[in-house]
Image (cartoon, rainbow, N blue to C red; front, side, top):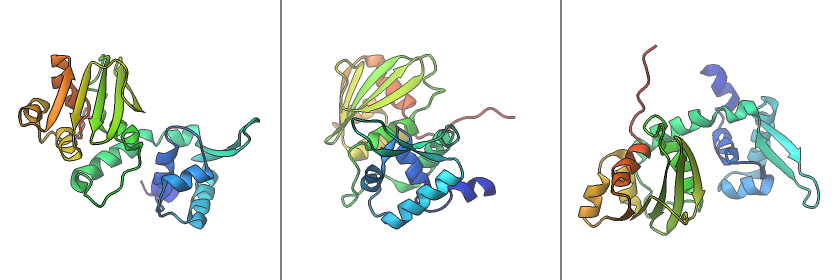
Amino acid sequence: MAHALSLVGERWSLLIVRELLHGPKRYTDLTNGLPGIGTNILAARLRDLEECDVVQKRKLPPPAPATVYELTEYGAGLNEALYALARWGARSLGPPGPGDELYPEWGVNALPALFNAEAARGLTETYALKVDDDVFTARIENGVLEASVGAAETADLVVETDMDTFFALATGELELREAVRRGRARVDGDAAAVDRCFRVLSLTPRVTAAA
């Protein structure tokens, strides 16, 4: 743990990795995705992450030549560690408050963090989730999740709710059927998917086999 933290434990380092989880980004993309980071800090963290083989720099070919940063194979190995840390932190953080700002693609990171691959083993199903004004799709194919912005044209289940209710559903504090009964959510689609959706997308602790 001490060695791992010496590589990625500096402030902003893991957030830079988070920004790169879904593909290469330019320096300006990273700046826009990390409000509050100084350009000198970003440059220093990128340099540190390059030196420890977590991030690499690459030039894109014409017609749109640009320099991008991307995770190395070693850096991509932080994927599950990041999502596990996000799940752990979210349980004491609570849902966003009125003064909190979420970037438009927040669900693309939130859904993989919630995803319980063990509960989804063998499942192929698509959920469209409308949370306040944001819409995301969780497409599960044979137990593997693909998260994207926007609603799928065809979904097994469409859920419409607000952020507080979404958080309560994800933490297991509220069942989706109960949320619908109370008027806190609306659903359209497969009745069986109503019961599966927030078992597959859940903040509940993962059960691991004993060594």
